[in-house]
Amino acid sequence: MQPPYELNAEILMLVSEVSQKLGAVQAVVLPKQPPSLRRRNRIKTIQASLAIEGNTLSIEQVTDIVYNKRVLGPAKDIQEVKNALAVYERLSDSKPFSERSFLSAHRLLMQGLVDHAGSYRTSSVGIVKNGQVAHLALPASQVRALMRDLFVYAKKGQEIPLIRSCVFHYELEFIHPFTDGNGRMGRLWQTVMLMQHHPVFAFLPVESWIGKKQQAYYEALAQSDKNGTSTPFIAFMLRMMDAALGELLQERVMPLSATDRIDLFLASGITRFSRKDYMQFHKSLSTATASRDLREAVETQRLLKTGDKSQTVYVVPQTRIS
Image (cartoon, rainbow, N blue to C red):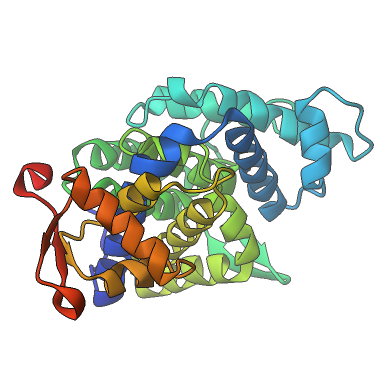
């Protein structure tokens, strides 16, 4: 199965921007991020993903559950959080191309909440929005075969993971394989697919941004349904990834050193630039600080300097590029 979609100009631009930010995060932020920040982002992820589905618990209440504190709230909402915590604690054990692993995650995510957790639906379902049926799912008799095909695509598709995971997420929502939990499983499994290539997705709170843009999330799904391609949904999800990565780059808890700033800038992939380019990337830097950063990088042979004064250009040595 090759799901239909198009790589338009917006998607290609977003892939480039997300890839640059991923490089920056993984080169500079990821190795230095304290466990407390990772834990906080994991809590944000769980709270937002469940809130999209109607869970009423706040960030503070979810945090209290994490630390085994007593929380007053609907029993169902508390159970949803506990289930999600159990799933995310085992995230690294999930196998992105295994249907068995996928069903096991659903079983854990939905235990005590629905009958037959961990099993595909055996009856017809429709998604109701504002009192109207927004999406009538495919017949239950087709679900097992369609999901099998979808996992074959997930494993053998030739697209980069950023695109393939978005397509998988949309197609999962379209098939709607479960009686409940499809949305949270779509978001969860996209994370599982991405974190195999980009570890930051294990705690990147993309769901938090989806929650902020919840109406746009549903509109992207609906537009993709209408168009018969996942193109609008791919663009939406890439925008959410870009926003989440940008936020992560801004919320570093430690001040950046000159080396950190150079690392972050070079992680964007640039190989030839001026001081002005460097200052446009680090907008809060003074001219003196930018000059000092670049001088230190030249002295340590991380950069080569050509020209003088306003004609000065900095170049990444070829050995560094390779």
